[in-house]
Amino acid sequence: MARYRFHCTNGLECVFDARGAEIRAAGRLSVRARRVAADVMQALSDRTDWSEWRVSVHDLSGRRVLVQPFGQLVGDRSLAA
Image (cartoon, rainbow, N blue to C red; front, side, top):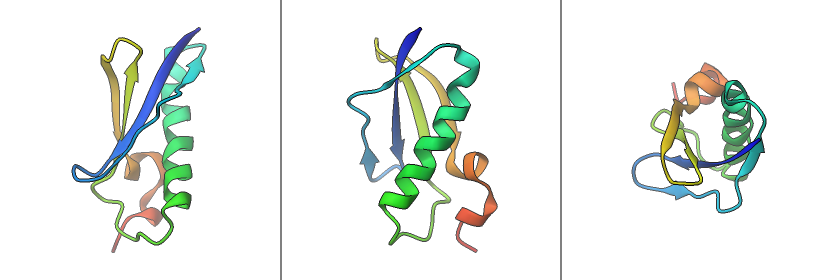
């Protein structure tokens, strides 16, 4: 099992994951990224435009292992029209 950090950004603002999460299989990173995106959208519910936001997943050495836009993670309903 490895620990990964799931940071979120739109290029100007960042939500950093200082604690991270232990993921058993690398194939499950997208599942966790989807959950993190949904949590950030709920926490910042005053926002309506998520089109530039993405989840950037890093291992504990700081190496980026996955980047996924919020739109791919939570569906088009979350993006501004």
